[in-house]
Length: 378
Image (cartoon, rainbow, N blue to C red; front, side, top):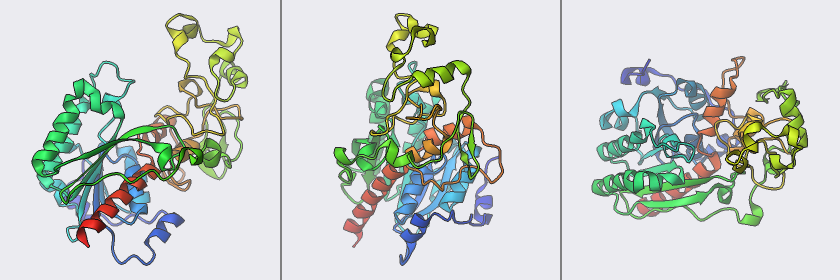
């Protein structure tokens, strides 16, 4: 059921999440930096980064109803379940707090542009054009978009070039684009992301990296303190610190796996039949363990499965827990994804966590916007 504008206006504010860092961020602040609307908001990673940097989150928009609770619970803002293709610029513009600069942010679904989608047949790629349409109809002060780097070359670059052309026609003279390496901004995983920034006020760019390579956060920095679990186990104090079960065969495989190694390290009888073929032998980045002393691999929507990548725990015989995956996405360890006592579904949680914008990268984007606004409005 989609929200109407009247329903949104009637909504009461969700309670604060209790995140100490977020609360301290606002102590003494007279007013928020700017008003943010987050389209394709998901569970709220991008919004949460802006919130932690002192912005007011006006609303999040997404079609995935499972994201309502985490978005509202952690970002103190209403979640609007609608397809952006059905929204007019006036619908979005009405959500902003108009006494503040207006910031429109979003991450159009990246699956159509991913290397995992070889056929380029996912119709969601057209949502980037809808994002551009909403920008042209609302003309926010600043626009920010985050996506996979492959978007730049998707369909010969035509899709991204059309989006940039829309921004220029609307008055955003020189949109800024950068392929950002997430560990450079404090995210403990090897994740490259395309960051776009554009402003009606003038040139804008992403801040310089905050972490030199020798100071990149590691998997141990992020999750080394979590309680020990067995495969299929769940922590009594955190329902999201749970991991998937392993078959007896996969348990034998993970016991044979070395941190940073591949299934090629195993005895022959443990190797999957598909990997014994000429084609399958090239797929090395599955059934692997992470390394403690390096950033984690890119967290995908299936990070909870040992066979789906290098998602084996560095020294426990199990895959990553859901909470560990969220922290590797730089969500605060207190971030709430499900209501208390609600059933935790791996596929649902994996989708919300794996598709999220890493919070620390979102904070870097937010700081860049804040610096830009301070430069041009003071």
